[in-house]
Image 1 (spheres, helix red, strand yellow):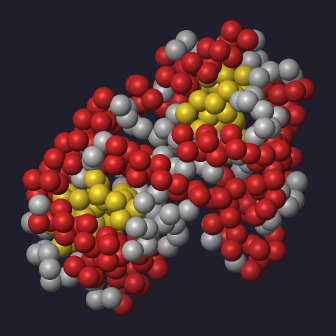
Image 2 (tube, rainbow, N blue to C red; image 1 turned 180 degrees about the horizontal axis):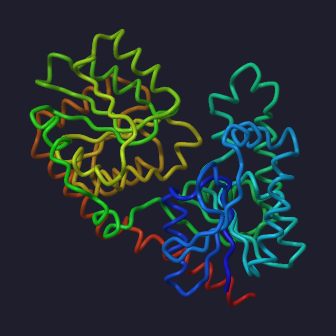
Length: 399
């Protein structure tokens, strides 16, 4: 059976898309991926068994058109013709759409060619749009209808039989708004342990950089809902209470310059380090000296239903996790006793939790061990990808 995946972004790198595709290939399916090229990538390529077809689109044009998909039809026009051509040329048996934006036109295409359609919901997309920076500017409020995204999510997903989500909480949310029973597959953003560890490289310079400090580590994007400001405020409160305290931020994003200004204004230049974006292969060098890893997301409907990959990376490296009280994250941390929870946005509570692990190293070590065991036995891709395989075996039987 030929699976046609549609990704309205470039590939690689999309870790989830690659893991899903490779898993389905290993299960005996043939996977073709239609995605974008923003520059020098080949239009036809094969990577790890995935047959890749790319269409070129200028990146700045992409950013503008994709943000206004419900306002102007141009982005849908661009994709509709190309998806139809892809389905016919590759003789696709099942259409697999990554995230919400292209579900609308894909429903029409799947019906036209009488093939099953799978909606792979990486995010609570309407809430993501609602809380994004560009939707809350003056121009964004004029051009982007937040309410319409919630309406379209319900309208489109009511017509799609097979839905993949990243957390039980997201499944429950969708079940509450979709009247008909759907074939849900819950596939969290866990890591493929062997592949991830094989990727890691020794980096002596990075390993030595912070070896004498007490390190709080954050890895990931720097967006408005990531809660990095709360950690910076907690560091300010702990300055002088924890010897050689340093908050190391590995990643980049839309609010990075704002965060740097905040650090400077708070006089924390020696206590907060911005490492910028780094290859995943050097993460072990940062993890080696980390004492605590943080997941400080601002609590919202979006983050309550999330499955952040970084949580499982932290746990794999035996690091105690301090996270905000986002429901799906809190549930894992408390059930497997691998970290501490603080109230989202409460820097004083966060500071107390950091100090708790600083003064009780044996507790911190035990939390890290608990997390590592949970990843080895429960939260690894080899186990959590099984619902994806089961979903496609069911589709294959029904086709």
